[in-house]
Image (cartoon, rainbow, N blue to C red; front, side):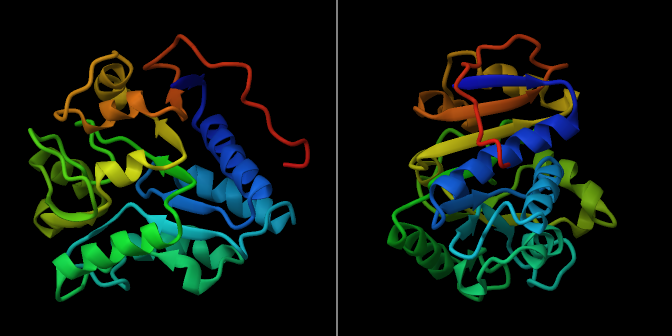
Length: 253
């Protein structure tokens, strides 16, 4: 794991965007795994800027989102479908047919999970997966548990996650209790992973992720055994750096 402590959210967003941009420049038909929430918003803004400057082309890119709330329609303002279009897809030249987000309003969640997993397999898996981390160490919506699901599945959200996400809803009662999420095996099969962590509330899970210990009670700790992970982290919660000097990018981005 390469660890890059960052002094500002703006710098974190720009670095994450550069990593994604480099991936697309090197492989125009790249398959991206995308995250939602507050942390990646700046990265999406930076990617839109690069596109509008003519430095990035999304026309051959395929995307798969990590998760979606079960029970929310794509039009719901708190759905991740709405989030992705509002903050990213509506502003770049990505093909509609290449966008994949779990259907939160599906009548058959089990089949939706199977279909979603097959679509990922069909394209050969994720080339670059962008991740955030929850205060309890979850990635996607893979919550701490004795057992973790390998593939795309329906998950019961923890009380901690529901409370954390209630800031996006009118009140706690409006937060969905279940979601569809990519499983840990699918995430771990990604060829490259970028994990972003910003804010002092992420200190506890990040220290566990970098501890050398692996536990299903901290799902993100499994990332330590992946052979190509870059952790971009708030310097306030992880001041030291073990990052290599290999984090270089084409001048044109």
